[in-house]
Length: 371
Image 1 (cartoon, rainbow, N blue to C red):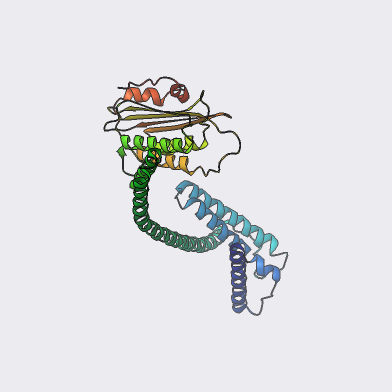
Image 2 (image 1 turned 90 degrees about the vertical axis):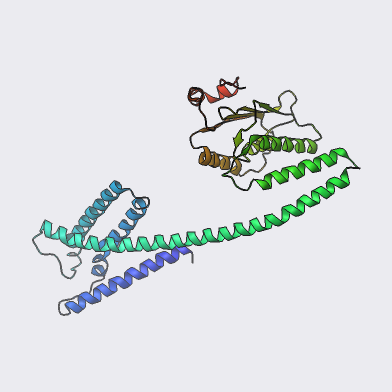
């Protein structure tokens, strides 16, 4: 039996037992005049059951996070529904089934309203208790999952401390052995070692690094891919401006570059993939532009996690001081990323951030001053 089915069965059994106990209590209070009725057995509690579940729905919708005005409106609406439900049940349904304790001939609005209000308060408190207990159980489950993931991360980190040293030493051994055989192979092994060392070093995404390190890493990745494809990749990587002292959060630029290498068509000599990085260290501005043709044929499997991770990290670190925009057609793919780090040229920043068409600025000469 599925979990949801078990929960529904539990609730049905609970309310049947509750109704049975209520019926027995009513019989015990008035055994001489009591007449058992299946219809009365259900209809005497059905409005309360509806109130209970409606209140749970309201609490789930408006309590966390707290939305005070919608919550108050919903509580009043549920009470009015309960009032109307009880009126129809007590004065129209129960008399038809000759239920016990039928209403008096005279209908007193305020007395009836107070009686329904008492029932509403009682069952709304029951509903809140159920909702609170359920949320507490869910919270405890989340804490256990987080604790489990923490232990798994600690274990993975411990393994990562062991394996990289082994891999690095092995690559150094291969490098030494390959030197007499092929300088190109030796250079490739050294480049791969540097790529691995850089990637493992960036284990804290809340820290910034010198952009020069990220640029060197990009060049290594491009070089290793050129070796893979016999130096036939058509990729242009251009850096403009002074990189000294400019900083960036790690592995942002390289993720975008790897996306170009993986999904772009880098075989067209007349239309190479272009990666342009403009830097203004004085104003703290970094502007990355990429443009490439799309690969034809079946697409490689991709989870899309890389770019989504970039968006989250940029938002976390730079807040509103960044732009990440993607323009895509059937044949081409363009990306622009602009970061403002300790930016003090408000006029220039305004010109870029309010540009009517970001890609018009991307595909032309930058309008901000570069050294």
